[in-house]
Length: 177
Image 1 (cartoon, one colour):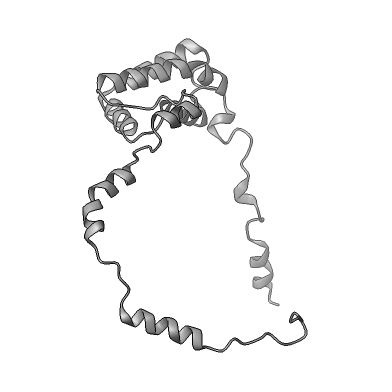
Image 2: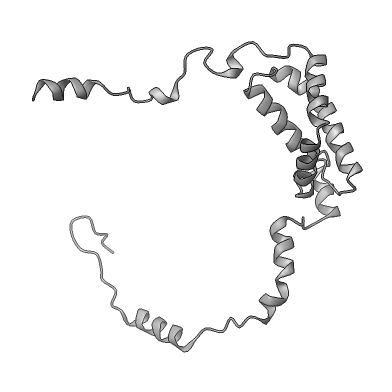
């Protein structure tokens, strides 16, 4: 082995190196930008008052995403960005949810709060209309008119498959019956 080959074989990353980071290398490992609940609430109120956020939030609520899920996603994303801690984010959740519900009410959309008991929710609305269900209902007439009868070629293929011989396994590791 040449000297060049020896040097290049050791000049590689250690396995698992990409899975580690230095302490403080991640945003959530540093002190948060907002340290008390008042600062966190001010941040969310300012952010949720923008036109861009309102449009996006209304679109998401129209899709059927529960308010609780959207609020949790928002606050956890901001924890990961190092804006506030998990504790202050959890304390801000009721305010975030109330603002999201207010946006849904002002846009006159039906939204799911996510706070309902699952057993009562299923009795109210047994089948939730998702985007896929809405799209499928649009094309229901087309599907009803479609011809799903198998062709004659398909019957011949099935017969050919049945006629094939079954090869029994043999050898040292084959099962014996």
